[in-house]
Image 1 (cartoon, helix red, strand yellow):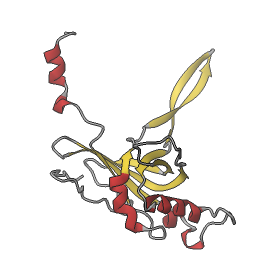
Image 2 (tube, rainbow, N blue to C red):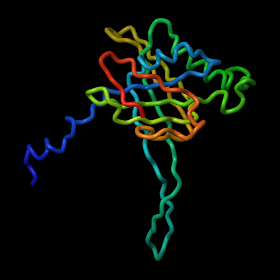
Image 3 (cartoon, one colour):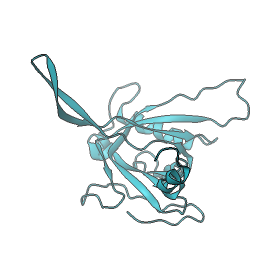
Image 4 (cartoon, rainbow, N blue to C red):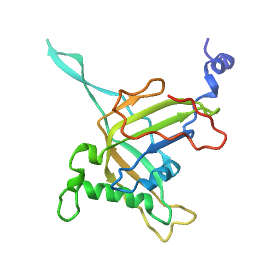
Length: 202
């Protein structure tokens, strides 16, 4: 019945999933600077699990819309990055976008002309309070389409710079309990490097 606190508590398995127990894994392309791939795991302070969207096809029948499932779409994915004084991670993302489309010539670098040259796979993993993997998504064929500005101000005190990166990708796969098709994942996920945390491999 409603208003029974004990019944509510009994349904809250594991005291609820926590949004701060997550990790982003993204291996940068070799032409950018793969040396910063591990740093992204620690500097990516915010992101989201992907949305699951299916469009609706509408057909009018005697003045009423009859709805049918349409096509699946995959909206852009965002991460928020903490910036350090090397600007290494930001430089890597800026270089990635630069190689895709040069700021002055508007050309793409020849070695990365095809999708296999500029697109990688990324992963977001949700952990439980014991360190087990609760949910894991793989983003396939991912590349940045926007590196956000960093706002500067003399009034900014006791702050560390941050910036966002927006990615387009082909599709996502829930890889929590199953492997992706052979050959699909081009970038290997790393084992969580969180002190005291175990991991349940997907």
